Every structure is written in structure tokens, then in C-alpha cells.
Image (cartoon, rainbow, N blue to C red; front, side):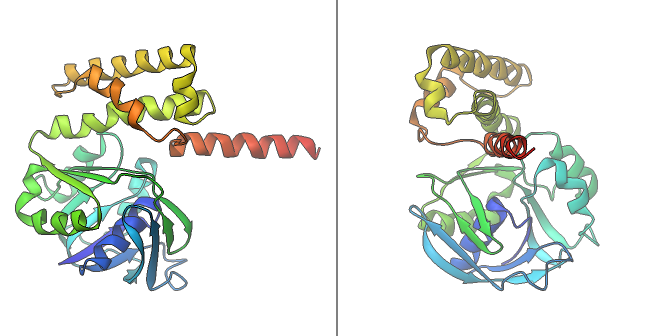
Length: 265
């Protein structure tokens, strides 16, 4: 099966490397200005998934493919879609974006049946172009049940590497299950400028986090999702203590640059 990966950041690169490693044909879609220099081989280093290199194709536009995986940030989606010359080029589109609003946008462009919502969880980072690290002890890929016929074999291959994969028939629950965890996680680690372990160890911060989780869950329930606030709260105790969200890492980097700039004035 031919997979196109739109977005060569941490998630896209990790997915591209893993799919190519298990024998799938992969094309990485990258910006026109960097496509020539982008490596023809991806390198992944992961205590869970393994350390390996895998050959891929590269392109500045989305080619004809069986599956188009969207691995860009939500704020980059509209620009990324400019690399899709023909909405019919992909037989199926699997977005891995955070949030929920992108699904309607994509279905308006590609058609309802061809868009298969999905969520991915795990710490995945691009070190340099073509080189990726996945330090998390978990990698979870949940896909809407509508993708079962097309992607069952692919998910089985990913499970052989160490992914935890499942199909979820209720799309609303699928999308909100990640959001009720990721939203509070990102907000807490960013607001307190600390990894999740320090947030949980501070009584005041921990209470604010739990309040945030329950507010997220109340919205999810109102939207029709099947979520359990107590289980979401409990899930935080199983997260590696040194984990931050990408939002938290960005906030820390901005703060560091601001401090350095102030010192040199």
C-alpha cells in the first residue's frame, strides 16, 4: 500500500519511518524549498519501537496514494492543503491532528467517506530533518471504525513494532478521548512551566489540573462523547513524570530566549 505523509515533524516522521520499516511504500511530502535536501532515508530511535532506518520517497506535492496521513499542526492545515493538487489523489485521508474542528474541514474537501479520523499519542520529536526520536514508553494509534477494512493489516504491522492500536466506532468519543487528556496536560505543563510530575506533586497545581480535566470532560459529555472523568484523572498518574507537551516545551523555549535576550541588552 502506498502512504503519503503530509508533515515531516515528529509525528509524521515517526509514522513514515515505522510504515516504511514494516514494508509499506511511503512518500514524505515536504515544502518545495527543502524537498531536494530532505533525506531519502528516515532514522528513528525509540526504546519501544526500535532503532532503525527506512528508505522513503519524497515529494513537494501529495502524489496519488492509497492513504494520505495528515501530520501537521492545526494552525498549519490550510497551508499544507495547498500541496494537494487533486483532492481525489488519495483513496483515504487519515488526519492525526489534535482537536476536532479539522474533521469537518477535511470532509468538505475530500468527501465524508474518504476521511477517517484518528488520534495518536506519544512523545515524538524531530531532531534533524529525517531523524526522529520517540522516548515515550507508549505509542497509541486509535482510528475510526470506518477505516477497519482498509487499515486493519497496516495497524497489525504497526502493533508488531510496539504500537497499541484499536478501532473506535464512535467518532465523537474517539476525538474527545484524546482532547480531554491532552488539553489539560498541555495547559498545566505550560501554565506552570514544569513537567507533569512536578504539577502532580504540587497540591495546588494538582487540584487546578483536576478541575480542568473535569471541565473538559463535561464539555465532551455534552457533545455526546463517552468519557469517564475519574478515569482521565487517574490516567495522569501513569504518565512519565518528565513529560511535557509541545506547547509546554515551546513556552519554555520562548521564556529562555527572552531571558537570554534580556541579559545581553
